[in-house]
Length: 156
Ligand code: ATP
Ligand code: MG
View 1: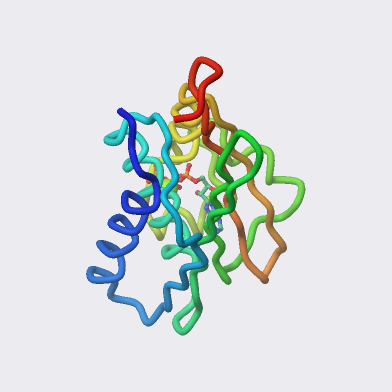
View 2 (view 1 turned 180 degrees about the vertical axis):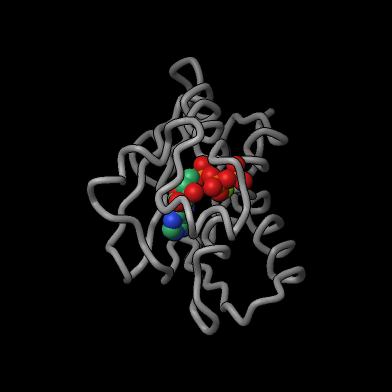
């Protein structure tokens, strides 16, 4: 479905902003422009929900989540950063694998199956994008993904 991404993304962030129980500030650094992407809205909603849920799950009280969207040549770069526990460098590549969870004891306590990011990777790649993570232990994590701004060689 051809979708205006900023309205779509803002709606998801709004939903979390209303529902969140923790004292976490949601910061939006979004372009003041319309950008069109071709996506499966239900699937992408599921992907973004998981990324935000993870970020909240691993964040301390009083922290902030930053949402940033940058328009680059041919694609959109979307990032979601938290100030949580972070992920050790050596584990960064593995979090997109099925059932992988960094700290089994901690993860068990927080719940989940370890499938969220594996599904996210599959879905983003199916929509022509890429997804990766940057993180510093004890400082926070950023999940970044891209979405193409063209389809069949044409601008959307
Ligand atoms: P599920 O999403 O299936 O409920 P999950 O959240 O454990 O379970 P993923 O979303 O795939 O699974 O994440 C995999 C693992 O990556 C998590 O268990 C956690 O160890 C780590 N992780 C993901 N996001 C973050 C984050 N923002 N900060 C710290 N660790 C993270
Ligand atoms: Mg998850």
